[in-house]
Structures are given as C-alpha cells and as structure tokens.
Length: 113
Image (tube, rainbow, N blue to C red):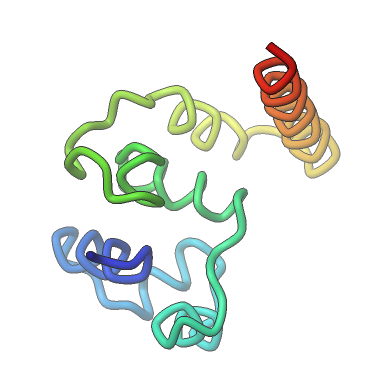
C-alpha cells in the first residue's frame, strides 16, 4: 500500500517537477517533506486540500489511495484553492474555519443518527 508521501511523490514526478520546485510553489519546507517521507509526520488537512487542488486529484485518492489520481471528482477544493489566492489572509482563515465547522457538524449529525 502506498503512503500519502508516495502518492505526492508520484504526482510530483508525473508533473515533471523537482521536489524543490513543488515545495517552493506550495510553501512547504524541504524538512517537512523529508519528515513526510520518513513517516515522522503527515501533511495537515489544509495542506492536503492545497496539494489535492494543486494536482487536481481527489482527497480520497491522496489520503486513502482510493480510486485513481485522475478521479478529480472533487473539483470544489480546486476551485476554493484557486479562488483563495484572491482573498485576504483574514478571509481565507474565515473560510477555512467555516469549512471545518461544517465538516464537524456533518460528522456529529451522522454519528447521532
């Protein structure tokens, strides 16, 4: 089974990028990328969304390995990522917090059913 890091590495390779260029474009330190490779840590939720949007792949595939990388059925995160570049840091923070709240509420409602 592939790890999240291995799927990210595959996407970097398919894009024809260097790992350094990937890190620079997504504001990831090479140290963090190395930690992901060694299994010392994993990308946070917001970074996973950003990576999935950058490569136009589904979060299911990136996180769980379900489906194929071309299953970009989750185009909504890509739309958010691309539009977020036009927003202030405060607006981006508000949207991120709102999405996390809605996800929490949805999870809570489903677990109570």
